[in-house]
Image (cartoon, rainbow, N blue to C red):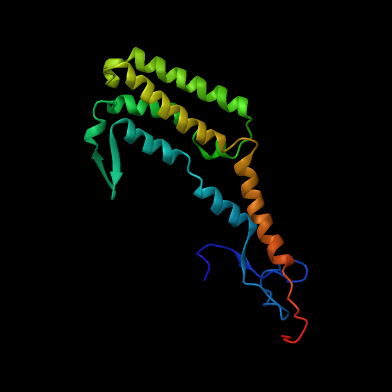
Length: 194
């Protein structure tokens, strides 16, 4: 049974075209019902959650991690950990580009690098200006935060390079249609015919 709310139908094996709703299953070789292309795109888009990694980053910056639904402190990270205010402020810089709209946009490598560099510079300025409130105790914390921020931000934004995610969404539904429309019954030649 398809998930509730999912639109399904039958595809003609010869033409690869969706049969009108209400049609019965074709009598010739048939394929299982396939989800509506728009529903597939919406489902895939719902699964793209670039902001989730920013939430994980915030915990890491505070020297914490999520274990079985509970936030625990990691004693080994206490010297590098930021205060809650510091972690939230740094992560808020990444929240703006970490969304679905950015993921399906089309940016080039230079645009991505310039954006992440600007975010990292702003984070450095915030940490220097508010070192006490952010829990900055030494310069190694500045580098530690910079590396985490730059890496996470760069990877999140690289998803949209050359419209990569958008092409993946379009390609997924196109590939499903091509596979279903190109499959033909196999014929066997020789001694063992089917």
